Image (cartoon, rainbow, N blue to C red; front, side, top):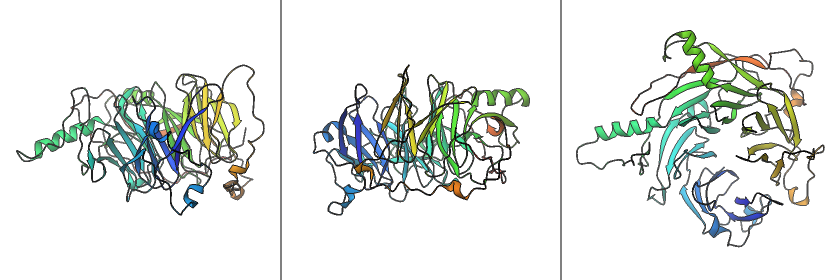
Length: 446
């Protein structure tokens, strides 16, 4: 229930750590942009959203980080004066993801177990002890929302995933459009829901009770047929060119060239996308070799100037594939149990990984690098975690070794977005999930 900050460089020294005030595992922490890495926002399994003053927290007595000891002392977690509650998360379930809106250092989105995506603004004043928020997307009929990713080539566009096989794409400019409609409808003389600076697509002070449920502008599916083991999508990532990487629970990793998919549809259909027509399938690259069944928030990332795709596996390994050829070019042991997070440095050839055990590991590319052949060893501080997790592979049919599909296989896609003016409106409908999918081939560890 703490947050730790390390410096990059020789021996990666720990800059400091502080209590967050959360009562359960912290699942996401993001630095507040333009804060000199001295503030961060966190969410956890308790569902709450908290703002941490790291500079102040580092001056407090350092916490003990191992296991559930924090909960065992005095029967309660420790509060910190450096932590303030933005929202208690009551009724939303576990907090899964926090991501700041590009070019908006005070505005961020959160994903929760209840399937709702919420928009927060740190500039807004407190509302009953916290910061008000708006529900901008409601995906609860598809299950928990696991991840959110913004498209660098279209900064107001973001993708979200749930427990069904579809990635849904939204445009935050619809929030501004909805607010304009609400402003037109409000009675004369009533308070305005907020005002927006000229350069910003968002209001500074959204009302806590506002519920937008903005429309989906595009839908992709990484699977043509769904295996019996498929349980949803756990992670998303965009490349600089708008390619979308998708990590599936119970299945493989995929990359969809969204721009090419849209251009191909427009070229063959000879007309823009409409909500009520059937859509053709489009190819996606498939990356095989790892398993993702033990945990539910395994991320995925592009690295090396977007030439490679990387993710973690149930065996504690980090997998790296060549994006173009789908060839597994590197596998490194990075955890005693499961790797959940892979985070490439934005500029340097470095990769940070973390998972179930208590160690965050940094890998650096270079000639003469060390290849870790054996799993990391546990130390006495790791023994709180029971590493013997039952492997679901034991229940699989070992005789099922039939070839299934090539690396490049067809996937389904719906909808389209291209350039979109601020006042342009969309009203697409979402497709129903695909029918029962064929069982996928047993994945062999490289």
